[in-house]
Amino acid sequence: MQHFPIFLDVAEKAIVLSGGGDAALAKLRLLLKTNAQIHVLAPLPAPEIQAWADEARLTLSLRPLGTEDISGATLVYAANEDTAEDARVAGMAREAGVLVNVVDNLEASAFLTPAIVDRDPVTVAIGTEGAAPVLARAIKRDLEERLPQSLGLLARLGKRFRAQAEALPMGRIRRDFWSAFYFRSGPRAAQTGPEAIEAALEAELHAHLDAEARPGHVSFVGAGPGDPELLTLKARRALDEADVVVHDRLVPAEILELARREAVILEAGKEGFGPSTPQERINALLVEHGRSGAQVVRLKSGDAAVFGRLEEEIDALEAAGIAHSTIPGITAASAAAAQIGRSLTARGRNSELRLITGHDVEGLAEQDWQALARPGAVTGIYMGKRAARFLQGRLLMHGAHPDTPVTVVESAGRPDTRVLPSRLCRLAEDMTAYAPSGPAVMLLGLAPREAASVAARIETMLKEHA
Image (cartoon, rainbow, N blue to C red; front, top):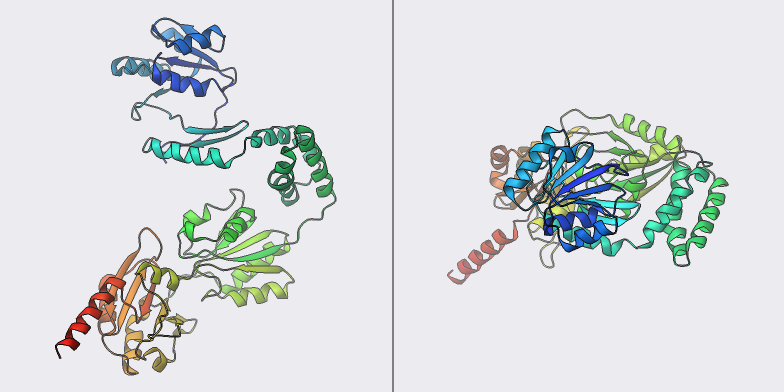
């Protein structure tokens, strides 16, 4: 992030703009929404600028900007649409220590003006670091359609009510009060008018003054394979409401950023054959925060109920009398199969699917190898990176065909994903050469769709010529 977004107090502060053409008009339409004192310097201003000056909405000087004009300014805009003149203005501003924006010149600007959705006092600023203004405008248009015009009125009346709301205790009850107003009773009342909104505020306040604090609760949430867009709506809502998030090592930062900024974020990672947070410590964390009355999200990669020790943590919560719920997620095998264009089950090929782990708490895991080795069987193998040779040996020993396809999908569903098509006979060697660093799932019995199609065509040709 090169440009740090902030909201600058410009009430009664001087903002100086040099220029009088189309670029100046575009900036002024936005700046005139503020409470700043706007000074424009332009020898030949557009008629609209002259009209605003006549209405006393800004101060206009019919000359080029000089050094004396910058004194005391908070911001300076160079909007002359003339490279030499804009460079002169920017140089004076920098010399005076004033932040300057040169229109359509990212490198020469100390700050950028974002695309803005205005529901005063609710303001949404959208920036792309100057890389994609068209994209910023598209996002602005989408938000304009989604955010009702009444939002500003709700926010203004809510702001006036903040003193009364301080009668509520800090924390969950106060947040619940504001959530109930802004997302339920407030929008309904806005259809009637300001008096109805004020009545809704009073009613919500009385209801929450009498409310008991919500008991602690733990939501086990499946974070999916890592793509934030693959989270369920229920998972997004749980993250937004969480006071504490206890997450696995494989949950990416992009998903953690969906939690409230005030939430406590705790990593409780486990790594096969590596450093891990003891399960007893994770259980204790969940019980500790649940007993404190916190709304806790236990965020697990993939699906919480697939190799996630879910029941062990549920047992600990139930022993402590703490309520819990589970929100499913997309497991890695599903994401991997989708990525290579294959179905985990198919009529005439396999009517069952097995999900196994390459190792467990005691080391390399034993399985029903004869069932896994049957022709046409499909198995999703988790945590198998370091168990490739063991898996290969056991399967071959129990009759699996050496040419059985195995597809390894690393970081399924993420931008850095990689796919390794292999065969059982060379799986260990391929895994050594491939050396995946991210989480990987093996799909035993499945080749990527393109490779499978080629193999089927070759097999058909061989049968025709036999």
